[in-house]
Length: 86
Image (cartoon, rainbow, N blue to C red; front, side):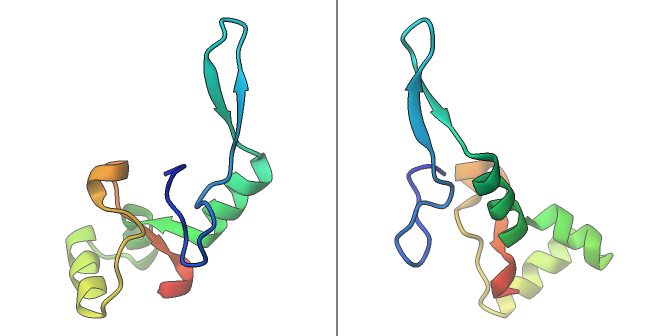
């Protein structure tokens, strides 16, 4: 997800790179950016629970409305949607 961008070309989740004591590169995320992402996006399972319907029914309805996940399921092993699209 760190290499993916939103509709305006900005990283979905901005990060900085740092090296740990062993010299390995690690990605660091600002807690404010993580919180902003969580506020602006929702996982299919959580959205279905909020609405009291099954994930299959909700996914079919979103597809019917032309609303797509921000990334393919294979990228995150879950479907995540922009709340603004809902």
